[in-house]
Image (cartoon, rainbow over the protein chains, first blue to last red):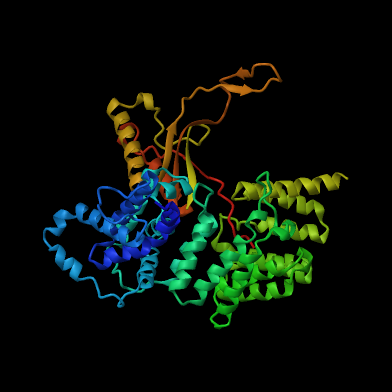
Length: 406
Length: 135
């Protein structure tokens, strides 16, 4: 048996379309999802055993993996729902399947994304459901990726399924929530046995293929451009390497070229959104042969666009950095001061804007005020939301303090 | 999606509203308290927000390295230590507001007279994994 043809990646790619078939045959989403998950596990077991499962008596899964998964999942669904089905004849259900051509695998996939990112779900539920129902990950894998017990993750997923159980599968959803969920998967994953960033790229690529939307393309470009720098973001000792100090020769030029091409095609359609604008900034960084050659004026223009699009305090903070590079640190600090007085800063009271002190420290250092910069770096380290950031900021403070002692 | 530790203190936190020590409650009141804590944890598991909970013995030992080839030095317990952790619950929630809400519920566990203890719990966020996109 050719294991390569039936590797887990292939099985997981087939997940959404197999699930789509079951739902179109009349299975409700929650039960269909369970059945597909069981079929996936069975396929993995069969592969590890080196043979098709004898119980099924079907063609070995390797010849027609999708057909095999549909058959096994459907049988699992019937087994689990026999009582229910006694009221409806099985033939009826099969007859309900639309003729081929009316619905494509793309449509099924798309509906699943919308359902799993339904606005009625909390972000963490939407993320978990998307990874399982669209991504084909097991509950255990998702639990490990988010460092919670498997029982907790199982409950989170089944609650999410109950929440969306009344949502009609064929209703169009909100693209923005789907993109937000994928962004979260990319940006907030822990490093477990599943590479969540790579998984987010895969799911976004699949979405962008099924959905003609410039922001889906923009998000894919954004991910590719950041993913390209991944190997250089962390030093061997685990510490963070800031963008300006990364070894640009080790950036993945193939991923960058792909990201730029996708971005350009999206921008050409003249329907700008925040992911395209963020991707444009990432592309400008990726395009600079050295940190000194970064096109900061263009980056600043994109941040201006982003402020118009989102008015987010985080964007304003990053804009202050760009402004500092273009017009000097004093201009950056002035922009920062405005941010402190803005209504959005008020709204976040009690939760200091992450990296505010870090940005202020950086600008003060560039202005030559090392004492203030060192103090702010130390304060920023105290507020840092993650260990790598805290280590980085502590070293910045230590570096300046050592220099001041001379 | 953030983890928070709900820390319960033997001492070091401000006094509870209903601060009769547990050993002076009736056995039924103690049982009701335990049931409340277990139900709370079970409910959080149902909502997909539970990670862990543990209780600690009040007395511990302080240990430190004492140089190569020598056994570690042990000391304590120190009666003067101001802050003493009794246990914790670890939750994984979507927002800070949700963490506060849950801490409030846990603090309402019944004590003497079956009345809520109004115990002060300390809410501490975990440091997260670094985000991928920072600029």
